Image 1 (cartoon, rainbow, N blue to C red):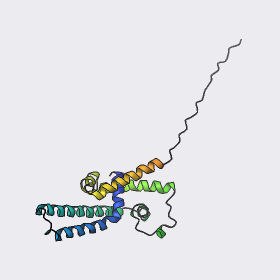
Image 2 (tube, rainbow, N blue to C red; image 1 turned 120 degrees about the vertical axis):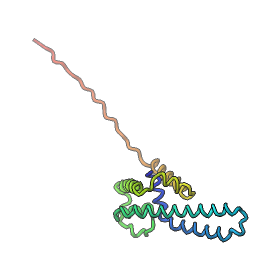
Image 3 (cartoon, rainbow, N blue to C red; image 1 turned 90 degrees about the vertical axis):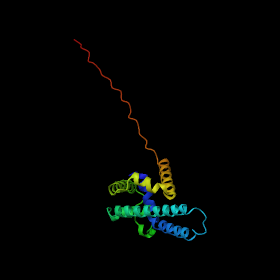
Image 4 (spheres, rainbow, N blue to C red; image 1 turned 180 degrees about the vertical axis):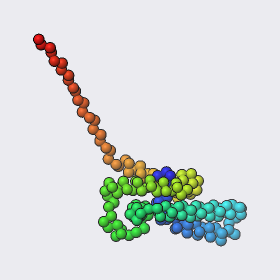
Length: 178
């Protein structure tokens, strides 16, 4: 699965339940105000069905992520919690190595591993594009994820590759003196 899609899903994960609750509220409000809404009944029904489909997608995405998390160690889940979920208090992460190069390599490898797990579970690029990227929430979140990664690449110091020094070799032939 695309790394950006994986990161977007991980950032969205802690908010999925709240978004589903908001969708429920909107659907209930639309249903209750349908009598005072003079738009065609079919349009009103289609909007409610669209919102219901969005909620179904969020439920399915949450199930995918929950299943993927069962395949990880506690240390890997802590890394995700620190970077993406942010549900635990800061005190939990006292002594947590979040600055070393090893931490950043672990994060990169962890996202790749989760992408692979998502693929095996059926959460593919095609599924994400077809269902999640029809929602404004995911479109905006994906845009922010890409922008964040782009900014990090700009701020990253570039490796200086030194060119090997040219060596000049001389060959001397012995003169035959006789």
